[in-house]
Image (cartoon, rainbow over all chains, first blue to last red):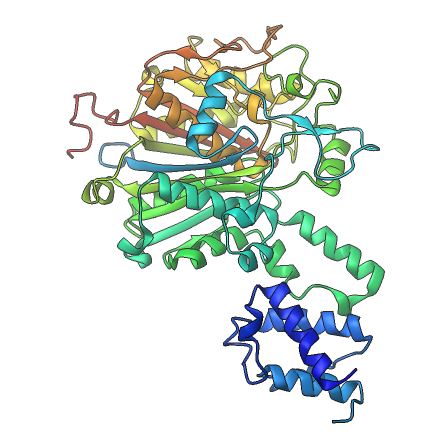
Length: 82
Length: 426
């Protein structure tokens, strides 16, 4: 997977799961701006853990504020080279 | 504690029930004697001893609620939130026009989000603790319905859930009345919700031998006071009422549908499931409700009985009703014959029916009343509604654990004072 693919999948998933307009979901969007609370974020992370077969530790979620932060985290976990 | 000036206005009714969603559809079905029971469709019940229930047909929460919100709520909370929307609309109450800090929300449930909890247990068992839904607690907790209603409208007054099994929403209405009478709130959104037609819910109620096994004829299965009764039909749904102080209702020129005149509460202190055989505590609750309302039993012209169609429960309640009225009981019906047993939503559903019956001058029937049980010696309104002007009604709701709640409901201006039009002056 590429970083771009991770972003696209995240965008699709958030749009469907949380009823957010896909166009609104940009790398710089914060989860708060998208109307997602911490429970939503946890649910989204769990979906990604399933989809990519990886585990995200709670500490890794600290400071996760924007969609780009989440893409970075996933890319790191999947060892995607930028 | 009795006396005037304690009546609480009922200004809105929101039913989400097996026989109808919204007052018009709901009351039409009740007055026509239609059953809401049918084969279970919520899950494959082929291997279950009980394969019938009263489901809310075609309930689509997303037709009423924001999709994201709907998905974060258990089915019982979805029912409650939709019922609250309908009740506010019925009360012609625009939430943005009231002080939200003066609006209380009290919604009871018997078992809350049991379906969702069991579903998460499946995930836990199959995939381990890290896969459990982070929203599991907030889905399943019994107070989620009351919280969701507050969140939807910003109602920031007192907010809680009552839990007394099948009496839960009787207690919710009593609690709401207290909050209004004591001046802690001007209005209350009060009622109950239940969604227990799930594999675990049906299996557990069936294991307790409480449900009718009349699988081949679901519409005839709920038979309160009938000799051939064999248990209740499990139902789901929610009913929410808008209650207001008479002053608040008058100030906004609200339509007052009926008045909650008083309530009485008691406990059998006898057994977790079986009712006290002579109904003594149930009788105490009814007497206490009359005293609280300042209305002697002789003024009560209609009883909406709790009668679920269990052998022991119906007899105990009938004995208590006969005693309350010195062996001259007024017309009585068990509308569970039509709606099935909504468990934590039963009390509010039946309080709503009682209020609507007074308003319409029509006493709802007890359907499937074909072979009267001589041990339930009451004037049961049989099979067809009976036109009858009644000014005060009594609605009983009793629960596992021996919890009893009785509500006295009056037609508009049927308060403690018998002087026409003078009931709220003092």
